[in-house]
Length: 72
Image (cartoon, rainbow, N blue to C red; front, side):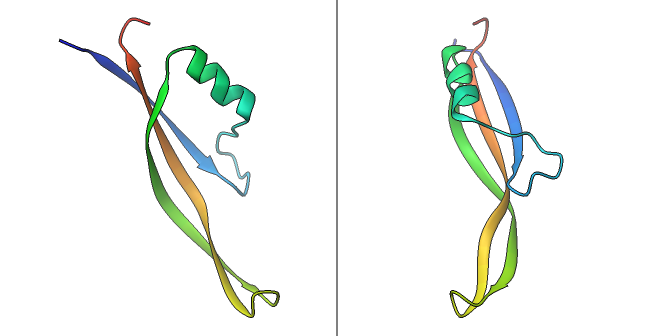
C-alpha cells in the first residue's frame, strides 16, 4: 500500500509574515520528491484602481498542498 506524507505552505503576496517562494525553492521541493497537488484560495483583497475604472480584486492568500511518497 502506498503511504504519503504532506507539506502545507501558506503564501501571502503582501509579504506580511507568510512564507515566500521562489522558483529555486520550488525546484528544491521537486528535487526532494514533493509534488504540488492542490491550491486553496483563502483570501481576496479589493482595491480601487483608476486604471481599470473600478475595483480590482486579486488573490491575497493561498495555501499550497504538496505530497510525496513516505520515506523519501
